[in-house]
Image (tube, rainbow, N blue to C red; front, side, top):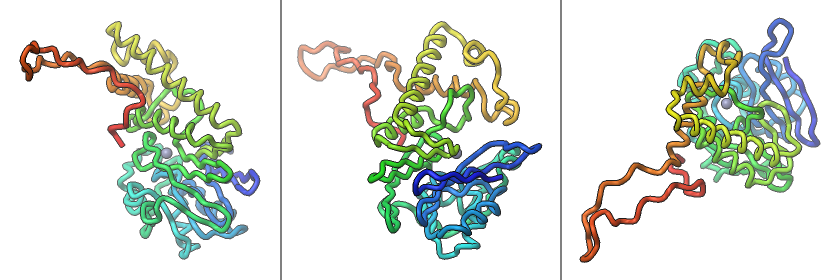
Length: 311
Ligand SMILES: [Zn+2]
């Protein structure tokens, strides 16, 4: 099923597989005068073509190579062979060979398996900029949800097409491959863009993006602090997850544990370990006369404004 909504010159296209007459999980693509950002899942590709038949389509930009964002590409490539497709250089190989996504059964059922698509233009070949008749879109690297993720920023209107870099709500589960350090760093990048409108992968367009993103950063940061406190008292990940999230989310059941509260706790522990003071270093031999061994300046606690060693 498909739902189309207008936001000024932007058309939001929400797509979902129908199950017992209801949508299973919405994901969105956005059209802005000739440019389509993301392409929805394979299961709604035919319906997306129906919407695209009513507007011009010249270019396609992908935020990241998850199946609910690239599944419509093969059908679009068949119908619009001249349309150039852009994605990050990390995403292009996954789009060419979606078996590398290693999709679990629930993902294949909910979104369908994308067909391979060759000939994607890596964004670095166009200096991270996509131009259309009226707009300029700047790709901004935003890893965390996935390593290949970019958002598209239109600076004149301060629009951000954010894919899954911002996911609303209070997380109670997490997939093991998500990187909390990257997710929080990316949210801080999104704040710095000072967006007027945020167009996320869910289709739930945000009119107060900065407030919403800061709220998310605060939630995740507080969660990491809560986990640190409980871990210090000697509790295991399982015990911490049971205390913080006593009712296991349905998502954990439906994804056969791909998403779980324990993964979220482990992500917080991994995040905290980056900021914890390092264990006492071994005494260094004195290099200068009069200096006693071990008098080297102690390593200081890392702060959040240090450069990201992962990117
Ligand atoms: Zn995703």
